[in-house]
Image (cartoon, rainbow, N blue to C red; front, side, top):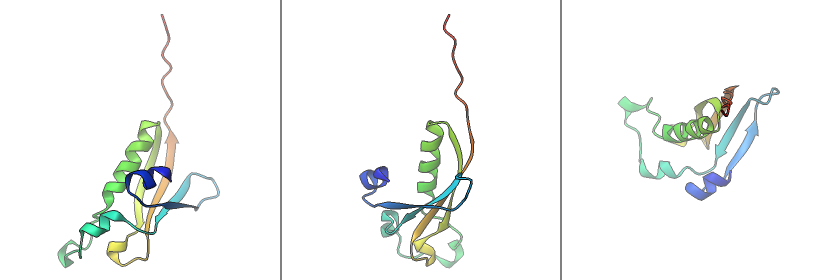
Length: 101
């Protein structure tokens, strides 16, 4: 949550959506990337302009050895009230232990 405030200037709330604890959603009331797009053209309605955020989150999780599927569930550009990003942890990738000689 702190990273969103530091890098994007917005706060994110977390909503847990699975009993197993491997799935949750980040809800952004305001998405700063939306400010740069007025309206998506009809022929590009399936374009997920803010998918950059999903890639950043997925990459950050991979850096700490957590494999995850990160997708948009709601998008303000598509008429939804909020921006919601769904995160599902797939598995923990184990660190390789290096032996010292």
